[in-house]
Length: 255
Ligand code: HEC
Image 1: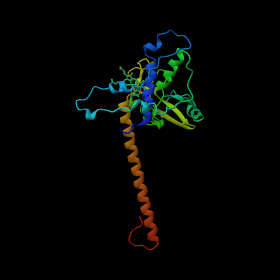
Image 2: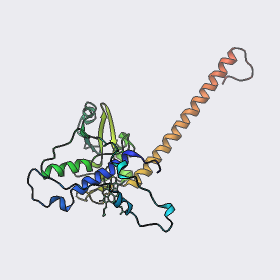
Image 3: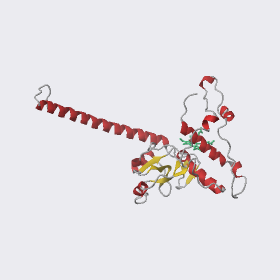
Image 4: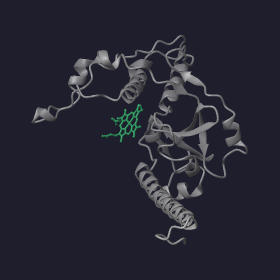
């Protein structure tokens, strides 16, 4: 079997299993506590074998990981996260305050939020929906999400109170503020024309324009770095030349 990246599968399918827990059957009983949702077993070898229509030439068919592999994948931790505000709406001192936050795991193999009532489960599902799987400022950098140019050029919608709801700040190490995303929220949050938010809809974060913006910023950065390294190389060559010249060498002219 080909090598399979571990955590993305665990997360994606783990989350979907949670979402499945909120399907219509899960809520047949009225709000009463304690609530016992029907969480189906998500990775089922037989169901996986029927995921796709058989291809005309099966040589190209996907081979899915078996359930006994899936259930060995470690659970990904969910860290506490914080909203990203567009410039002009960020509370005063927010960045400094974030830098003082300790990393806090809100869900992993040993921690979890309260799971007693139906409302607890809905809140917990929302927590998973919002939890990031990309860190390291992959989708956008801290400078970008705090610059008006990014919002204007990419056309990123924000909520009525100035929150950019598709990504979150996550603190996994004290002092390091990461713009994080690729959560269900990144692709399934819709900001409506009146600035309200529909979670679980067809999202309207302009992923395509954001990728283009990132590439263009990368190209500009490369050109800048190239110019700097050319200048450095020239400078080094000149000073080597000057030093040899001052020691009597005549094969190069000190510029
Ligand atoms: C990178 C973007 C992206 C992320 C992240 C993402 N989705 Fe989706 N999702 C899509 C797209 C695009 C479709 C539509 C696919 C299609 O129609 O072929 C979709 C379809 C779906 C559907 C099917 C909707 C239908 O009408 O049948 C569900 C359910 C869903 N996503 C749930 C989730 C959940 C839960 C998560 C988080 C674990 C998630 N998605 C994360 C992009 C994403």
